[in-house]
Amino acid sequence: MRAATAAPRAAPEIHIETDFVVLHPVMWMFLAVLVTFVLTRTITRRIRAKQREAEVRAAAGDPESGGAGVLRNISVGGVHVHHQVLGILLMSVIGIIVFASTPDGVGLNICAALFGVGLSLAFDEFAMWLHLDDVYWSAEGRQSVDAIFVVLMVTGVLIGGADFLTGDVGTATWWGSVGGLLVVLVLAVVCLLKGKVMLGVIGIVVQPLVIIGAFRLGKPESWWGRRYYRRQPRRLARSRKRFGPRYDARWNRVRDFFGGKPDPTAAPLAAPLGTAPPAPAASSAPASPPVPAAPVASSAPAAPAASGEAVDPGQRTTVGRGSAGTPPAADRTASGAHSTS
Image (cartoon, rainbow, N blue to C red; front, side, top):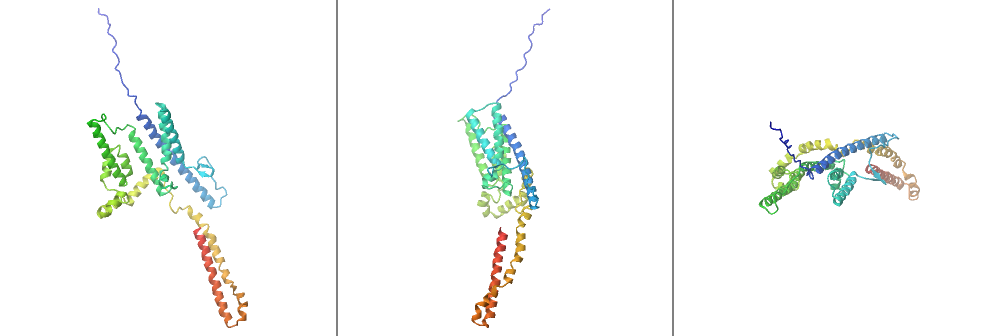
């Protein structure tokens, strides 16, 4: 008999790609930006609600109008510290760490996540960079939500990696990719000039979007619209129709769903607080007419008595009108001062 000496069959080798230098860090950055944005907007909306409640109680004369708690604005020495400051500081620290120590593996993923936190905190107040004013809860503050959307889309697309140039340097393939990249960048600039920021930024990675955005109508208030559409009335009319109030309202609903509705220019909350000062003005206005009602002419007859009695009534009435005419002007200025304050 033949002995069974067959060697066991070797298991097939499985090669697992372990080069996640682009994949894992960008993925952690994307998740950190998303989670931080959601938490930040939740906290700021809660802080705004508490401030409104405190103002309503203060207007009603409630002595316990304060609402100190865990969720509140950060102030240092009486200066309100915006969370974009924390984000910029965090990004700066992480940038220094990455360049100084060049971490790898888990360390690189942690740095990417922390950098994403700082990126989200900074871009959540992007509108404040742009306007150099505290417009966080105004209509202009919606630009911060747009900026966060762009950051999320760019990092989300880069999770799988992106190769802008292909082939060996100097080869025909490499030069072809360089030419294609230049065309994409030109189309991206056209999108930006037409007011389509998202398409211009994301289209660098997803090329079909930048082509669509570059060849379609631009927004009427954009640089492209002001430059070219004024000489083309029909195109300007089409642009205003496409990007009119309905377009803005549709996108504003999306922005407000994630970022919260901005405070109206005439907030209902400001009505009772703003009308409180005019109330005393209305009560003091009737109190000022008694001043002209008691004419100072009683002291004036003493001077004209020497000149004659015929002139005295005329002078008395003239002085009476003058004294009666002067205080109303003063009253008007006083009431005007109340209305402007």
